Image (cartoon, rainbow, N blue to C red; front, top):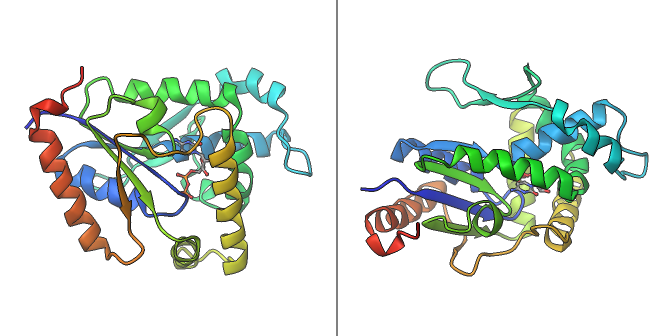
Length: 236
Ligand code: CDP
């Protein structure tokens, strides 16, 4: 089996990261959560007063600060998922908050931010053997990825999943607020000028409204076996 790049894109809270992590573990591949990088930049902007009360980011100040923002992924204990660090500080829990979710899409729409994060993300793919999830992985970051999946589910189901996830972590969240945030982010992510959320022409679509995690994983593994043994999928 050859080493490939797997790009999993799709709507907010559609289960991309669960799928991507499962596949990475099963294949012995690295997993990279591109959304975590946009979230970390957003947290930095929030902490440094770069977001106005109406949610508009101060794009010039943030663009100048980008070289000072270092995002790394660290594993605390063998076998555990990696945690996102911002300038050396573990911010994994904070970046998942609804407060960060409420500001991330306008920040992720800024071309300077996208440019920088895209360059960092491409660096992870040099040796292939990687699963990356996000919004523009199959279209912009790795347009030649051998396997591309585009995940969708209804907004209500996605909001329910995210709400359950937040409450399981002991975070107070109102279902209505979560749904509102998901719809707003979908809208900004789909309509931004720079690398909007859209299905790559050669992506396989998975609508997982009625699928269990096990069914989803099985579906993904079948596609992975096909792509990683298919020589015609060699595009480099
Ligand atoms: O996990 P969830 O679906 O809520 O979102 P995420 O993957 O953590 O991404 C958070 C936000 O980052 C998205 O709503 C996008 O605005 C942005 N993002 C992006 O623009 N491009 C990516 N490749 C990944 C995330």
